[in-house]
Amino acid sequence: MKVATPFSSQPAAVKTADFVAIVTDPGSRDVIGKLLLDHAIPNAHLQLGTFEDTIRLLQQVERSPRQLIVDVSDLAMPLSDLNRLAQVCEPSIKVVAIGDQNDVGLFRNLLRIGVQDYLVKPLTVELLRRSLASNEPVLQVRTGKVLSFIGARGGVGVTTIAVCLARHLSSETRRRIAYVDLNLNGGAANAQLGVLNNNGLIELLQMPQRPDASFIERVLVTKTDRLFVLSAELPYGADPSIRPGAVAELVDALKQDFHYVLLDVPRGGGHVMEEALDTSNLVYLVADRSVHAARECARLIRFAQELPGERITSVLLNNPLEPVNGRVDGADFDQAFGRMIAHELPYAPKALALAENLGEPVAAARHGFLSTIAAVAHGITGEGAAAAEPWYAWFTKKRG
Image (cartoon, rainbow, N blue to C red):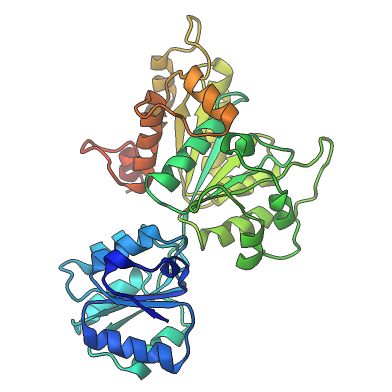
């Protein structure tokens, strides 16, 4: 166990701690410290600090701890602040909140947002032990969101957009991202991210049962401490047998440990594509300004809407080719798809070609393409959105 001095001098080992507790008062710190010593809990980190210290620490760690004790005693709006905390924690983390309000309503509300338990001060070792050892499910289990990207036709820039978004979400918003390239014969994501293919995806999809977290972790390819890739590169002509349900089970497992699972979906059809869209919270259809793309986009919209469950389907209008006369006019796209067009990405040949060939991020800090990617990310996370009504508001009103 490591008992830290103030937050500014964190030891390096805290980045991989399995148990973290940051509390505001010495009494609670001493009780938690006694529990850790009595039960010889390894790889633990305990310190005095504020709620904001907890958020800063979790933004710096390589991955979230398995268990977290967070002190909400000094928070005026604990539910809102704990939702902020959720944005920097992996979905699988078990959170125990402690505070000084003996409020049944607060307790129930905390359980609804995914907190494992709420303990009222003063703490005791036995009370903590029972709470941390409990395996009872909370009222609502928090999981990550699934985003699918699929092209209305080939060459519209699906992987380019999805890779740029994955980079943004992992680096700018510090979310933990799993990028799954479902083109089993070798998609472009590995080249664009500058990582090697280990065929980990096909291993997972051909398992006879749902893969466990430890095996998934072994086959993930690490790009950064927040961005991980699953892909395959089977020989052309290979026709792997993927049992029905395998994609859905893999995605469900990934949702437990990642804030966002990005699925790069090929247009081949079949149950792999169907399961990918079926498991998604958000489906982005990428189209260019061609009649064929418009027709296929309309077909894909109908297909996604006919799947069971609920999801938001949006259109990203990309311009991968030089704008010339004869392409479908923007007004015609607006008339056909209306508010379903979330964003239009500009023509950006030089910056994108260099980034894709080098496997590096787009270099231009203020490039229009990156600005649009940031706007897409803001629509997903809800952070930094403009005061104007967001693009998805129409869908919310329609469903309500």
